[in-house]
Image (spheres, rainbow, N blue to C red):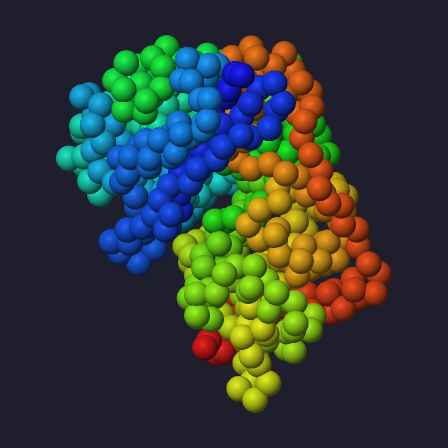
Length: 503
């Protein structure tokens, strides 16, 4: 039996999957830590984590995989990595981390990116970067240059979170073109590093690491890392990708018109195109997809909503730490529309779909004589769905078709209420698959290491477990509830002219 290992470097936990090459099935999985990792908030709107904590949890998760009966480190044919996007890790000449990582939901660089968007020219940015520099990694690096010059002066290379874990595995400082694009370090028109943005920010291109292919032997497990992980030195690291391109890949979403979704820490809908696409307000963003080549470009159009997993976690605390499946059952006992109770599910940093407005969450329409825990839970799930549909409508305006959406059978998509609301509000067919991000990274490692000749070989065993289509009767009810939610969004956030009814 030969294996592939996939690591998912999240902000909540590190997940690892051990894939049996012969069957294409996961034979073991691990999550570390059991409780969510802490996110440090030194100031309002900031969000940081210690990259060394990620590495420690990679070791812990690997230790769980190693107890799989019959496991032999020598039989691991490749390792793949997927990771939380848009983070910034700063590495000195000695390989040490210079400061805590500024992670994806940190909002400190919003105004820096907005100013760059205006001064470089909105048209220029959208035509060349397909995005505003916004709150992405390049703008975060500019923030460090302006506010922590003593740290900036010590930087040898910058790393995305997955790049840093690959560095810990191999000792090599590298990234991918897809990774450069997610940081807005990439010029799509020139197919090269976005030198004009670096020049504008006063950042040297020497700080960017070497580029490697997404699917390739990018390095091999060092003796030091092998000793820490209990794996075999020389094992190839053969795939890396940001979490949302990888989520799409894990669902075999590779070609134009195919759509993937996830409802984990963040809520995301991701569509593949073969032509440049941009939103004039940069509420939805485009990045280089994992299978893009010069002759066959593939871009991922991504809408992201930060307030997804954190809202569901907050609700769990509010209702007495119920298991998530019990929360889902309770939510289903409340009517569609939650008897007028509405959640605007924000409050976790600047939201791109709201043009990077830093805004609080809002609970509207609370009636103390009517509403119960069930109404609260349903309003939370519907609010997340409605925010996703709002973003999907922006994607439609960009020319991205929305017919069938694929998702893993995990996180929010485990909830019947969430699935029903998503399908009927969005007027889409939903296909659920038995996979996750770590399994996707393992399959990617198989392609990069030459175990699989094509993606078709890698996904031959991918199991679809549910297909859900819209119900005309339910559609009418959900569209009515969505219309009320849009009205609340407009009045409270997009065009406020009344006092927000915060609770």
